Length: 230
Image (cartoon, rainbow, N blue to C red; front, side, top):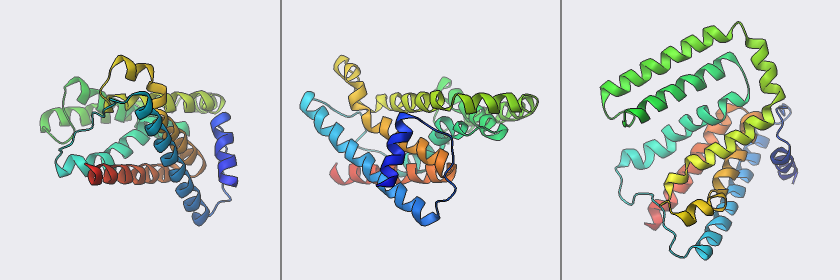
């Protein structure tokens, strides 16, 4: 299939070239194929991990409130992660400023050990700090816009690989970490690496909105499967 050929080529040689000839139907068909490909890798990785680590356990909580079971993994997490890991892959002043603002917001919440929407004071401070960083970055980047644009175009391959690796290891706490888990982390996190390449491919070739929607669909399917089998 043509989409598989394009995707494999992208994994080997990430490109910033945008495919503008694809209609909405072609994009949807390509996205559905890539979602299926991601679940094939998930199945392969899961079976191999269980074979190598018979006592392997996920740290995913078995009991959660409806808000965190659906709102966070299906709405908040995909949007946040796409901004943090994929938005800046296609450079613009707004994209990079938005990335820096959201990064500041997330780090502020982590430092204060708070969760979004839980307590109004740390959340307010986090949103204010993120907003200030966004505004300052947007103003600062105006003077150097052409330099950053050139830099991102020259090094898009490095940015994609960095995005995929950091995105994968961000999900390592989803598992009960042991020395064996750390040693086999490239295998255990294989579905996340594959998802990172898929989201990056969709973001660069189809657009940011498509990568967010694909992320939401994969998380919806994954969350539904966890609920059904718990």
